[in-house]
Length: 121
Figure 1 (tube, one colour):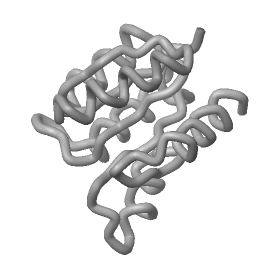
Figure 2 (tube, helix red, strand yellow):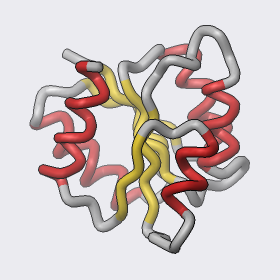
Figure 3 (cartoon, helix red, strand yellow):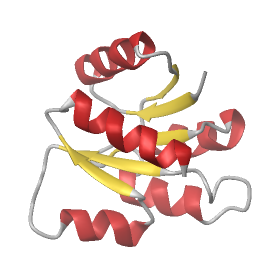
């Protein structure tokens, strides 16, 4: 069973996505802000991180940069999740170190495909 770290401050989004991932056989660890996300990436060593971009404390881009800058966590794949699909957001996410990018509302089959591809890489 693969462990996924879900960094999401919106309780409704978090609960819905966590339940759907657990039903697909993933173990899900939760962080509610960017700082906690960085800490849990280090302590839990997940197989993959789903990173909301608009987070309290530190945003998802900065949290991604911090995770990708440390030896023990730099190889963990990160998928940016954002409701703000603005021109340039995909590039900004990839520049910050995200391995992929997906938009909200979540299209679960598409997201699962991206998760699977990154975990198998």
